[in-house]
Image (cartoon, rainbow, N blue to C red; front, side, top):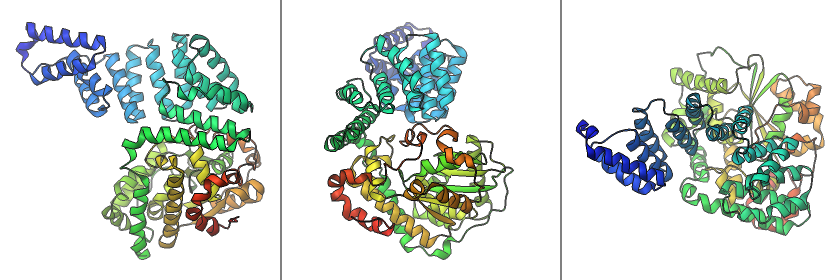
Length: 546
């Protein structure tokens, strides 16, 4: 940097102009000025902060973080910049880093209600619901009329099944801002719980077009509205509503996921395992032992909407079970070994220190989520880990695998109608044919895995558990080495709080019910074009094709 500018009139005028542009919200002009200044060797908090804000506004989040951190060199304890860094990390989906940044900002300025709200949102996205609840409450204590805090907390309460408190908060938000879409969404969740489907329809029918509605919430509202129509027997209208919500989400996410599809990764692994020799995939033997391990290690796999959440909740109601709700325990190993043929070859040959490091890394991630596993049965539930069975076979040969199965037609339609947080896999469910093809591809790959890998696996049928609960659950317990507990009969009351982002959240809070079995028949006409794709799997798993 040319320090002569620090005391020059040019430096002062430039900084003043940049600050004025930021103050007016003209980030394009602020970017032009700050970029020019940095090119001239000028530096400082205002200059770097302005360019960072412009990067942030245009979606260049990594560059924004770099410039925000440059700005911090001139003001290390600046709460505003730390909060901006937190917002940027949240936009990148790095919620732990976002939370750390918000924590630092609030340590400097604990009375900033808006930052408590942003921290709470990051905590929700990081599945830390109790902390998020407290953060929203703190924001409301500081600013009782903070509509964003009131409405977001109402939504959180409703998704956690705390309907009375949700209604109070939503009503207060709407008294201040009658058109607030998040508060209306929370009330629609409350009304759905009370089976007030006509009220849900009236509330949401036009709200889904609200101009201030983010696309993910709009998709969720369309799903909820579709359910209200479905419950009234208006299946054609319901399907149109599900389709409309998915089209919103698909259009919004097309540029992000068009060239990054999970279906392509499945095809790649399928080609590899069609030709690989089973002898290459014999279990490896780790030599190092981590300090704390569970008594039993179980992976709960299958396909989304196959009853994995229900089974996990049943098992988690046993005090000897620790259940992980769809945590990213295997993702780093998958990224290292399962994205190329070379990586898969390395996984097939893994041994010695490399094997020990991979196993230790998994247990370190487990311990980030829970410390209470010694002497317990650890259930690592993540349907997407079906794609990662080679990792399980190689690294955890002693682990048991529960493989959930449900009528493929119910699975595919449920994936289509339920609102997931869109990523490379969930994007596949926004089109009914894509969803059917994704299901068939994953099941074909799972079949290949079972032919080529050494897996200690039990198939678990959703329908059997619903219609013959205790014998089926006892069979699962026998397989994984878990003693039956009478508390498992009341799983909906005894199990820990589940992930509110699971589309099954509200269903598994209820006593066992069978309405979901064969529900696809209500939409047989819409599903008919998918039958050639699904029929082989309907037959393979023993379901009637009629």
